[in-house]
Image 1 (spheres, rainbow, N blue to C red):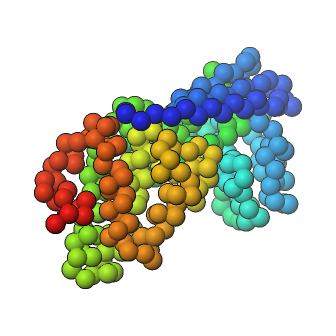
Image 2: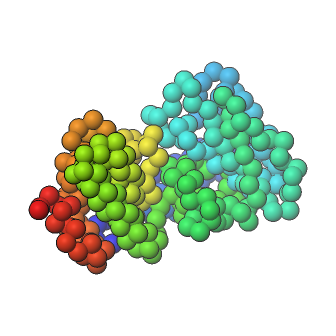
Length: 302
């Protein structure tokens, strides 16, 4: 891809009371690796260190304590607001995925629950290997693993490796994804502008709003990253800024929300004109040129 950026996160994990081992995870750019030392399984993070609301944190710690010594649980993954520093509120629950051995069957299904404090699900390791990846049918859940914390892992760091794979886009994946979402963005821009030209304000705003997810998916794909859930967009941009100044947190967010109350045609044209040179630099000029003379219309010409 033409645009790259580097992110570095280094977390030194505390020892588990039972395993007494340490896993250190280092994330650089869009790559991540985990190294586990000794033993059959490793707890990467104490439940007590995650923190949380009264009651919920106690139940979360109790859950982790129950599965710590269960050989049928090969991985524990914490996602959501409790895993992303600075995003949890008093209403945040604990989103926990128990990755179980394929031979376990339904034995641990009783741990599954969904209420105001805990959202716990179980998944067999065989399914987890491809869950949320392209072609899995669960691509919508992929960003859940961006910044997720692995609380229990195998000795070879299998779970951490799979979580890292889901939380980023490999170069080949980004290359396959980007042209299609760029074309979808152009389609929404074109429809928005036609509706605006024809005096259909509702249609224009709806198409303008639909352009935003395609725009964000494309821009993040250029950086080898998974598009954030809307809830975490500001957090992602603040913690891990995109490479272009005009895509800074405040500038980009203020521009996107203008679709809903400002001159929608002007907003989508600004997005298109800003994006076009970067799309061409990324090698996607063919996607743009396939729109022919409509590009002039999208740019704001006659």
